[in-house]
Length: 112
Image (cartoon, rainbow, N blue to C red; front, side, top):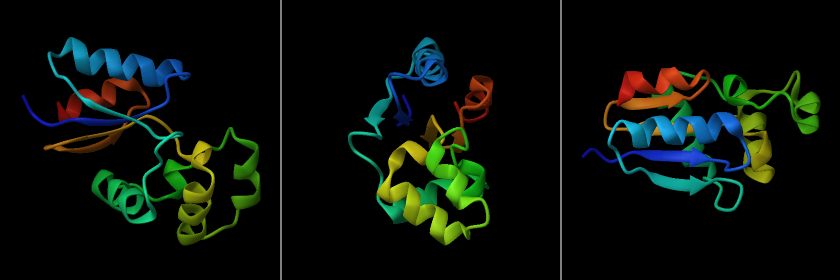
């Protein structure tokens, strides 16, 4: 089995669906509840770089705090995400094959 890490919010239906998809594929992921144990800035920046995303693309725009970041730089967005991890769109999944944002959940199949 390959090493898989999911940055997960158990209160989020999409995040739960992605976790189930990974487990249904026969994998046992490391589950990081990122609201309780948020990634540091370097880890978050690396996840986005490895996913081919910008921090802005990883911003959970449905959160109220995201409105203040409308014109912010990616560096400022990363800083805001570290300060308030609810701003991180979920779930992020890392495998040996890469990183994907599980929206839609089927995108994670690309790296399983």
